[in-house]
Length: 170
Image (cartoon, rainbow, N blue to C red; front, side, top):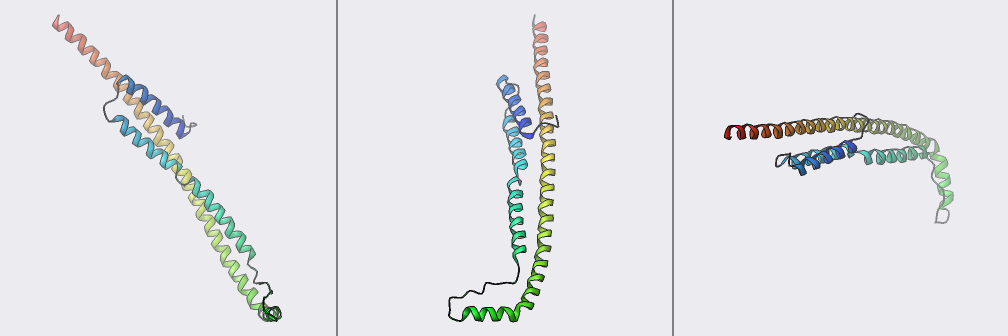
């Protein structure tokens, strides 16, 4: 049973409930209660699947941007003499800017590693939630089986009572 997906288990439970409801075996309100449990289980299992991919994409963008930190700026200019001014300024400040770029890149690499750990932890939590939801779905299925058995016993007991009442009347 553990190899089945939550969706397969939910479909099986829903089919079984539908058959038993048609047969009149379930008490009033049971279907609504089970539907609420199914909805909660499905919501929990799908939570976070899209977020992990989105976070991984954002993390990849951060990594690319960190790699691009160089401290170099294009020396183009729209103004006359601006290109020469930017070139001279860049040469005079190159050492400090590259040092600052290196420090910035190191800090951002640490942030990227931290984000990687957070995304990985989120994925671990999501997988743990999915396993928990599988267990809960199996638990609901077990409850339905017990209810099926109880409903069958109640029908049998009612039949026996009718037989006994018929004997006592006759």
